Image (tube, rainbow, N blue to C red; front, side, top):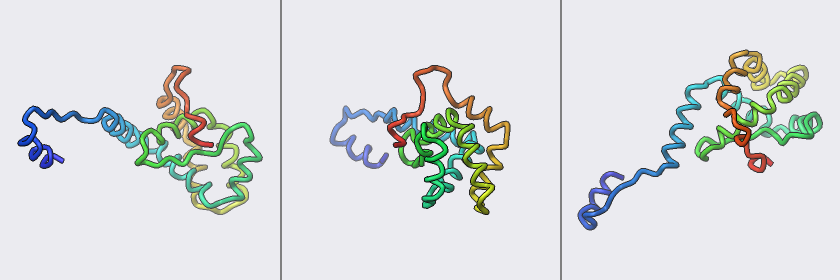
Length: 145
């Protein structure tokens, strides 16, 4: 990109390069994800628990009719990981209850990992730290329907 800008500078001497603000915000969100590995592992493994598992999705819908399915964030989409963090912070106890039902029935490695992560007290602290304290900042519900 730098080479292209240098070449264009010859044609447009008054050209000024501005870095995209949204790219900068996305980089900050990536850095936040790296600072909270337990939250990242929780989101990644819960995604694996429900991926290609219609029986688990059905049980989730039966047990938690009032909340949407767990989000499946894509790291290259801006803000989806942080939206997932808000979702898990708001619905943590219900998801923990559902995961404990899965562990009783199945031998899935992903279910065991999620159950192990959810037992950590530091996970609850991390989630509460990441979620802003103002009432207007919640996960985007339409994003997960």
